[in-house]
Image 1 (cartoon, rainbow, N blue to C red):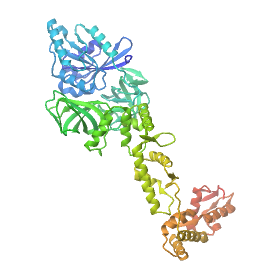
Image 2 (cartoon, rainbow, N blue to C red; image 1 turned 30 degrees about the vertical axis):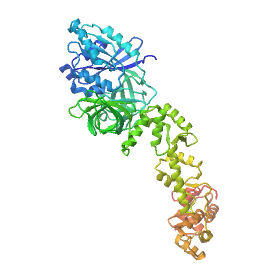
Image 3 (cartoon, helix red, strand yellow; image 1 turned 30 degrees about the horizontal axis):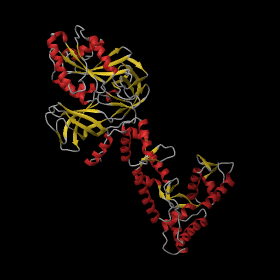
Image 4 (tube, rainbow, N blue to C red; image 1 turned 180 degrees about the vertical axis):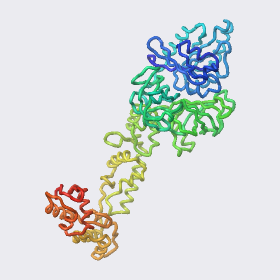
Length: 637
């Protein structure tokens, strides 16, 4: 595997151990940019510098503060780094923040790094040897156990060439970032550049971002556009995962941007306050983590207060791990596999961390057993299991794109997993284009619900041709597009559908003799009345006289007679044959010239009550065209 072209390295270590001085000696950049940092001589916030290595590889250094008061800034800077440069001063050795920073880096899942023993010019050889032994003891059993330990001096330059060489060797072992996934950039700085507008910076943790692309600011869901991109002060058209990026945004107010937000490809991530996780308590934690404990949750560049809901026990002992739900007090944005750190509520110290299994749990999902089963399936990590679990939670059809978003998997990976599930019969493709699919069990439940609903409807309303589609969609709780795909599938499972109705295959209205006779009487009443139609009540009364008996008047009128009538308004109907004759009369009288409603009324020999709504319906049918108070014939009689 070739070395990545862009690597992000973070510094770590106790305050005043020379992290900033070392980065300045390596890169020529002073990362202390704030006046307060200059005045106090310590780093307070994040600093950034670039080191060019042989072979065209660029290392972006994120210099973090070492003071215990600024650990939350250190955590924000540690997000997205590929390797760490742990800095330990030779004249002081391992200190409290050295240990805490190493714990944090281990919790964040780092796998590579090296150790610089700074201020080597201030101690003799024997002392330096002791300090190196102390460092080896510190990192034993951690990801830095076999890392290079390089004595250096930022003042004299001693060891700097060797450190640069060691950095290059570690970088060569780094794994390239996934540029095919969805773009995501946790924001660690937000500011305004005069003449350009709002700018945010961060490490692009996945995917790519291009100039002029639409982007989303989460968790608020703000729509924006990428006006410009820079990577270490150089304008680029496209930025890739693994790069430190400055993004100039348009379409969003600068005062709405801040550290802790996430720039993301629109529609691919969603904010949540409930995360399914595996949490681990540090071996050196001072006490067990009890059920519902409040903690400081550090996720990406975000810090929020959250409660820990343990799923398989009431307390977590130091050194142990367990499945849990983190319930944040504010919306957060996460992806599957993201690492997090938790610090005790008070006093604030690092006590543990873990990995996100499920980035978004619904509030309705509260049963421990159900959550345990779900997290166990997803935690297996196999894309097929992850997609199958996501499908099973949907209440209906979904797309591969939606599954990719829900599972934080690349779309191609989600698509392959979906195809495998379909091949196994665990999922079904619903529409001709293969856009929508559904879990087999969920689909079976939906189909059973439709069969029961439509079958019961046919029994209760034997004069109706089918169940209203929109009522069925609402009953099933499906959005219009997934419902349309489901309806396509129903047509292969013993149902037929037209524009508005769904019925069982073979279903036909079979009226009783009295109902057929009553419908004929109703229809006849409107046909005989011509353009002076009766009210519905009058028509029903006449039909009851002609056909005595207990036939259901409303059902007979709506389902047997009304299909032969044109409704002009409340309680106003004309027979379709009468309407056809009216069209012929109007065409004969007015073809080739304009006419008014009054003229049409006179030609038809009816009243304004009938003529005006009839003409409006003829306008809708494009038989006539209205212009002001006049109309012209444009259709065929």
